[in-house]
Image 1 (tube, rainbow, N blue to C red):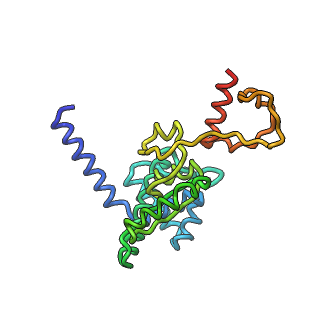
Image 2 (cartoon, rainbow, N blue to C red):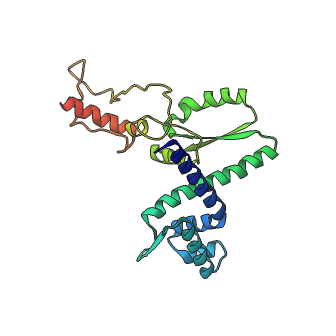
Image 3 (tube, rainbow, N blue to C red):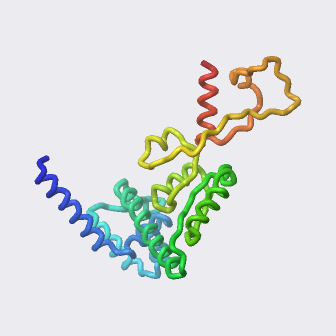
Length: 237
């Protein structure tokens, strides 16, 4: 692609984005998200105090602007199409941004200069946040800090949707390969805790020797469990 062609492509892409931004109405966004949540056009219309024919026309207008079908009718109600899933992801992000604008303007009018939304895994909340927030507030006393607790997957989704500004989580392979920017804060040690009445003959115990013993483990899918499973696999050879 030549430089001129690339420039024309960029201008064209920007023009499309501007046209979509002008033609997509907030009420259309809310309607689509409400249908996705309730799986029902009728329930979404009632929730927004609209007639069902009016909601149908509004959804059709949105699909006409985007040139895709957002939902399909199934025996279980309205289900997003593959293209609809993409659209809904961006609508959720846009709605979150609009809500953030309203919230930030509200706190600005009240004399507070901003807000930071921090997601954190419950087990790490008391480890890092108190001292960090205290230090931050000393430098920026007019900023409101909001803490949202959740699991690894929920916090990652919050970052991608714009609902969170930052998250304190344990690193994993999928995070390092993702579209998110991360910074290593500290390294944790793995410790195996056992009853003091247990007696082991060797000073150094291999994990392979402990496979048959009863374990209390973190749930599947969380980074700590993934690393522990990997350690067992490596120990088994």
